[in-house]
Length: 288
Image (cartoon, rainbow, N blue to C red):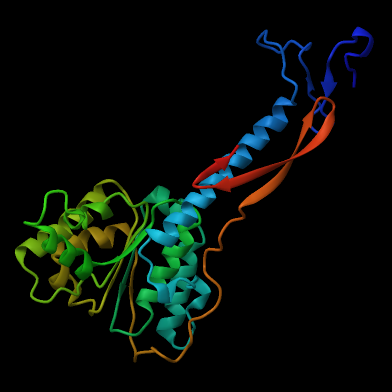
């Protein structure tokens, strides 16, 4: 290390990156170097962006993911292997959540069919909880609720957000649509809205996971053959059988997505010495 004592050049070397820097050091592009190791500054910048992105994913999960309060602690291991179907469901969810980036790139979905009480909602929530740790924007929704909101908004005040209840689901990086066959006496309008949503995500290769209280034979008739056909192509179909397991295994534990730290410390080499700096996330952004 050298400094500017007795008019010596102001040039230092970062011991970690072995980079010479300083106002008297000319870089490869002909610019004078800064008072900080450039590689340390790049790492600090990456750390800032990563912290901010993690908080943004957490805030989405907490406020906008739609995961019901009861299932905020759901993870793939929450599915108890109490029956052969539960074992198959647990294995399928663990396999799906084990490589979410590959699932996203492939646009892979999952179809869960069977009677109530066999863990379908738990499975969807567990996958969305895991997806929110990786992507900003995964959503859990029940189809009857989304459709009811849409209908309630039609004819209302201009700009009523309920009119976007279905369209707002279109571009979610992962969409878990529960009770997809839960609309009784579905009208042509109902089928059209469901087809429009599923078809859009099919064309855009966005992963869609659905659950339905139905048998494999009933499913196409309840959701429409065109919907069923697209869902069959984009993901495996798991048919669950057996008696309801509701109430046989408690769902508890810590939240599936822990709040990220509000601040972290990083080291940077500055004017020939290591300096510790604190990166703080506050009010939705990295604080200066």
